[in-house]
Image 1 (cartoon, rainbow, N blue to C red):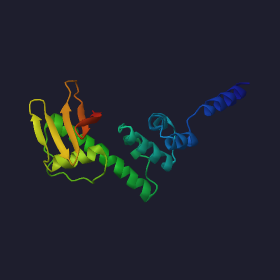
Image 2 (image 1 turned 180 degrees about the vertical axis):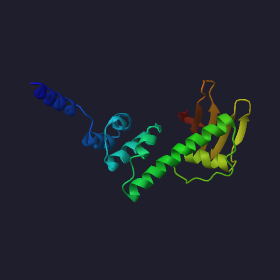
Image 3 (image 1 turned 120 degrees about the vertical axis):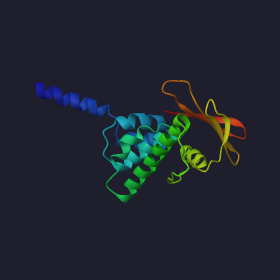
Image 4 (image 1 turned 120 degrees about the horizontal axis):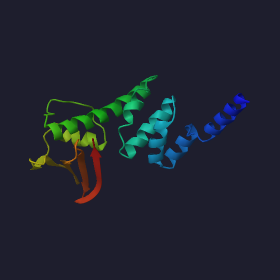
Length: 178
């Protein structure tokens, strides 16, 4: 009797689980938030799926789950490359945070380039391609073509680093990182 109960319970649980096909369908339908949040809670060892989940997290600017995903991308060169890409973005986030909050220099740090916003900001900080707007609030501005990025820190404890992204002087998106 108890065994029958566990079989029925496990069938019910598996019927409600978020699986590979759900992740692929939601990713193709651009439900990136659901893929990132539900996918990181799924017990997936499929590295194609883990790569999709990581990309979905990047698309919604939720990069903290990448640390967990990186550890599982190991079986082939393609997956290790994805892990390196995700790790680069995480490291750039941490380095920008230290630059803004702790005021460390990034002038001698070299990391791979990506098209992700943190990579663009990081590269310009390393090259000292920014203007200080308010040194007491640690607020800087970076201009790249018709894009402008304003970085500033909050008064929270611990402080958050905000990146306001402008295109043609119109705020497009506010990113924040801890």
